[in-house]
Length: 192
Image (cartoon, helix red, strand yellow):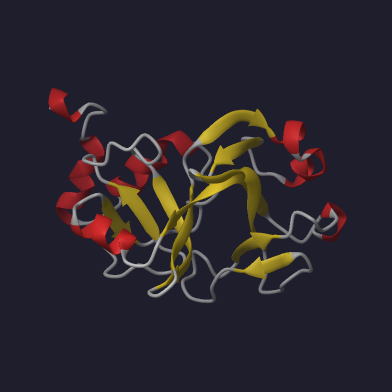
């Protein structure tokens, strides 16, 4: 289990977190500043809205499922895209998240105002998120201390997981020690 909040790390909702916006969610941290707060996107909430309905020019570059993902409860009328590049190159229209861990070294945000043609052939995978999750300075740390979130390391493939609805259990299952057992917690903890 990771010790601190960091860009590229994951927040995994504990079974105690019953806020419908974050219940059983896995959030990728995109920005973290002790003074400015934290920003991330929920990775495991595919919506019923196809990318072709909202951003049709980007649909050919999106990694399946080809739907918008519910990135979080903040600014749900705006879109944010994440893409992985196959090499260390930084193509136009793409900005690296963080140069740290292997899981995020080739992960970055996409400028959705750029022409998709400049990124065609330059990115390996891409997902588009409606909205994001945000916490003010100290808010996320308080929620973690209250037992709402586990902070864990991300792995290559988490952002573009083939079955996003199973990501919560999969991330927990790969953790060491007792945390792996949390993956077996029933959807309704009172049924345990």
